[in-house]
Image 1 (cartoon, rainbow over the protein chains, first blue to last red):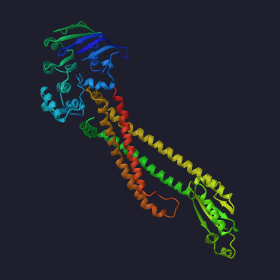
Image 2 (cartoon, each protein chain N blue to C red; image 1 turned 30 degrees about the vertical axis):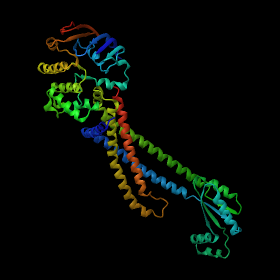
Image 3 (cartoon, helix red, strand yellow; image 1 turned 90 degrees about the vertical axis):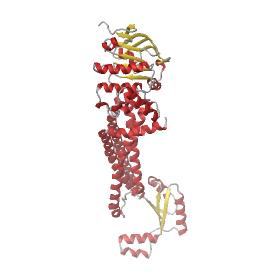
Image 4 (cartoon, chains in turn brown, blue; image 1 turned 90 degrees about the horizontal axis):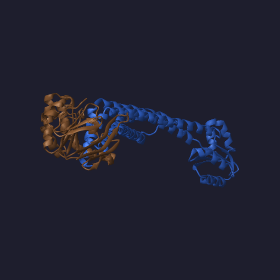
Length: 228
Length: 294
């Protein structure tokens, strides 16, 4: 599903965040991306939905070469990928329901479909009771669940999450992970950058270790541990 | 784009006005205040311009025919003058009429001249464009049977100069004011949008196209422009009608006449509305552009 070939990314301030990444990710996989801060995890992830473009190298998603995408086509790429952000990135002026519905309005879904899908997905993440509340009235865990609901509401084949449990307590994190497991069991590919050792070691999946802009370890049922 | 998406954009733009509360208020006030200023100034300038027109149109050429010329010759002269390019009107005044005028202004003693009138018949010539007056006068002077051709040479040119300069100054002032208005309003709108830069970024990240983000903002600019121009439009319409009702009766015989409120107010209000909407949309577009590059 995702193929990266010799991907190299240098930021304008000189930082090299990707230094020759090669990876193959299949449909339906659940992948943890681990590694120290500043190792290039976020860049690795951001390049998949084209928030960042690689300086050189090739990224293919379902056969589409992201390097050949025109600016106009980027929105259509993003619609096939659900993204869960560490800082949630909810629209502050919209309530929970509207935030989730927004992802469907963008793709011009019919109002009936929007109502149905949003109601379903809010039930899945356990927020049906809080649909009319605004983001600033919710706890961090609840906001993260809204963000997840938004990322999966249009049933993307790929969900990317950048430290979705980064700001959450262990119990809440576990609740979030349960949601991701559910989504993964429906066949959705999940790529998750995380610092959460407990989760990686207890819910085993393929682990990619990113260090110095390179993938230094790639293990199925891997462990969190890394040096440094 | 589908119809329901468009109606979504309409709904969204109204919602956004409400949810932005104070920022909306600030933008509308900025539009209202600047347009009130621009509007009042335009009303003043247009009336001064009208006065300048009146002064210019008051310029005429007096052609005095030879006292010896026969009626037929004067008639022929009149026809010839009427045929000159750029002549708007020629009025004939007989030598008797001319004498009556003089007697009226200088006193009864002059009625002695009625015995033997020394004056010639006169033609009053107006140019379609007052600036052609001198050229027309010169041409008439070459015709037969003209004793004298008078149009206030020298003075008229100076008058035209003064009118020209004041018109240009007025135009420059209006343009400068317009520019300031554009700057002020689009700056206020820019502030409201910068406050929402993050929102735009998020919209882009969940797959919104540029137009999907842009259109509600453009519509919002339209509403800001419309709501912002209502107050100055009403204020100018009411104030001008009041001023007109009060002053116009006192100006009946003066050279300075106010412009009739209809269609003048409608034109000014239309212009204000157009400017409000244009500036609103322009300000929105300029400010959103910056955040679309995600």
